[in-house]
Image (cartoon, rainbow, N blue to C red; front, side):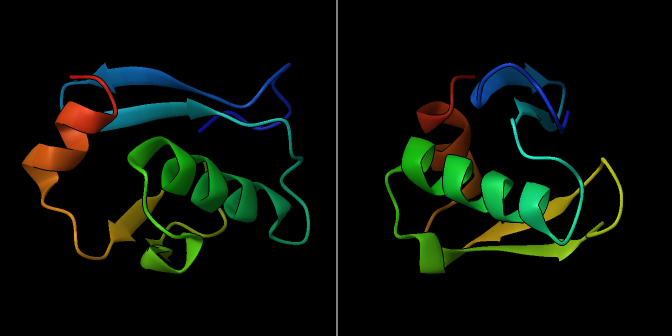
Amino acid sequence: MQPRASRDHVVGWREDTLRLRVTAPPLDDRANDAVVLLIARAAGVPRSAVRVVGGERGRDKLVRVAGVTAARLRDTLGA
């Protein structure tokens, strides 16, 4: 995840890592909220289905998307 980007977007996959850019700064969980919203919109799931479960304070995050398999998520977000 790259905070303070010029726009929110999914960059793509690099091996098993999804690369994202968000406009939010890494302050007060704003970047984490932007990541959750971006993944939810891109995956077509409710925002409540996406949760940051690791890396809340760093650039590398572990995100769980409820109700979606890893394969479907990879296909939906551009393999």
